[in-house]
Structures are given as C-alpha cells and as structure tokens.
Image (tube, rainbow, N blue to C red; front, side):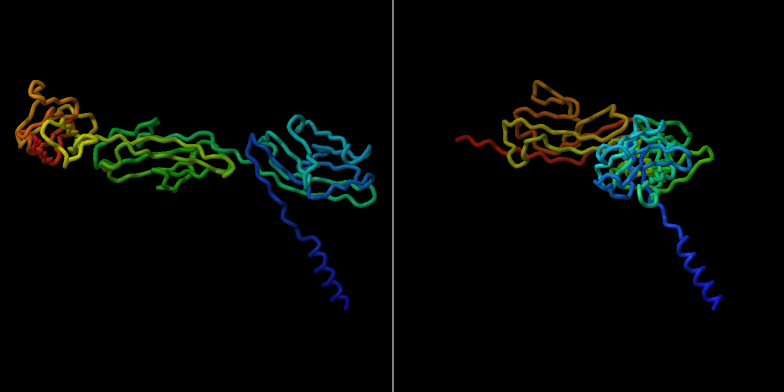
Length: 339
C-alpha cells in the first residue's frame, strides 16, 4: 500500500516538474523585436499592481508597468536603462507586447514577464528572444583568390573555370549559393578556417553560350531580410559567329528594281572583329558609292537595286581568335513593270 502511494506521488511529482518549452521569437539586429506577455489586462482597477519585465536573471527589472495609482489605462511606464529610448510595453494590443527597436546582439536571451496581482499569486510568462545578425559582405574571387568585380576572365572556349564566393559575418552562419539567370546552380558550401562561409563554383568547360552570362552569389541566414549578393559576368575569347540577314522592314518577296536594299552582317565575337569582308557570288565585294554600293560598319546598302544585283551574298569576319563567315543569302530582284 505504501509502495503504491509512493509510486503515485513520484508520478504526479514528475508530471508537475515537466518543463514546458519556452516560446521563441526572432528579430534581426538593428530591427524591431516583439515579445508578447500572454495575459489579458483587466479594465477594472485593483486587479493588477505591477507588470515587470526581466532579462535573464538580473536583480532589477528592465521594464516596469505600475498600476498602483489610477486606472489601467493610466499605468506608469518605467523603462530601465538598457531600454531607455528604444523599449515600450504596448498594452493596447492582445497580448500586450514589449517592443524593442532597434535591437542589439546583446538583447538575445530569455525574458520573463511577471504579473503581480493584488489578491492572488504572481504569474510569470517566459519568452526567448533570438537575435539574427545578417552576413556583412559577399566577395567573389577567381582560382588565384583575386577579388573580381563585374567581369571574370577573359577565358578561352573550353577552359576550366573556378569561382570562389565567400560570405563574411552572420549569426547563424549564412547559406551561400550560386545562381544563373534566376536558377539555382550550386548550394554546396563550407566554413573556412578563417571563419568565412565559402561556395566554390566549377564549370569544367566554358562554352560560347557562357559568354557574358551573369553569375550571382547570394548569402542569407534569414527570410526576414533580403539576401546580400555579388555578381560577375563571364568574359570569353570567341572567334566570330556570323549570320547575314535583310535589314529591318524589308520583305524578301517584295524586293523590286529601284528599291534600296539593306543587308546586315550580324556578328558575335570577342575581342571585336578587326576585319570584315563582303562577298558576291564568291568574289570579294567592295563599296562603290558612285555605283550605289555603300558599306558602312556591318551594313551593305544597295541603292536603287538592279537586276545585275541578283545573286548570293555573304560576309566574313575575323578577330584575334579566328574567323567566321555567314551562310549565303540569295537576293532576288523582281522586274519593275511599266504600264
């Protein structure tokens, strides 16, 4: 009988001392923190005498709300030294909330809201404040640990590319990711011996499609603020890629004798082309303004086109990386009927 009573007493005691998880609230350093005190403040006087806020285990409260003189709406606010000018206990909200703005890293900890009733026991409501410190900076470096701004390279087509992104600061440690055209391409990262968080992006063989593409490194440790980021574009040495097309607003089927015809040599190259040659029926073709043939930059203009201008045209471009030529474009000139 006694053993049974002892077991029941031990079981009930265990239940009474089970710890209840403390509610956690998150704020960003420099922003606002909101800590609720889960009570309803009565409108009647003589119910509550004091509401006291404590942080960790200090001897003095960091904030005091005194109801002992007057109605609840006339309670006196006394922020402690640590909250002077940045702390206010908002009693018109439910639940009433202690607001701290701005917050400091040192504000992190367990807070206790103690309600002292005039004719009943004191009640304490604990909450935990977690302060997040965003990362301070993001730096992109090449394989030689040279800091990069705006451009990486130039590299040759097919070259191996290694870019390092490091995030400085942040608590908790940030997630560091690489993005291309809004799509995530690398989310593997690690902490260096110097305390930075690094993500190393590797492209085994650069392609022409990588030319001037923007790569962005992001670092973030909370969704309460926007990630910080840095970007570079890939600079490639590429031989000319050439295409030939009719100028804007010219329809192939409507070219007639007497029309002005524009041909555009479209070139993608880096470095810029140093030589551009036009061909007509496989033979180099040069400008002759008196004959109505004008070559300007990457455009060929045939003024008042004639039947003898019918035939195949192409353009060839060259730079330090090589040369490229367009496919042939067949120009047909319809007869101009005279009525």
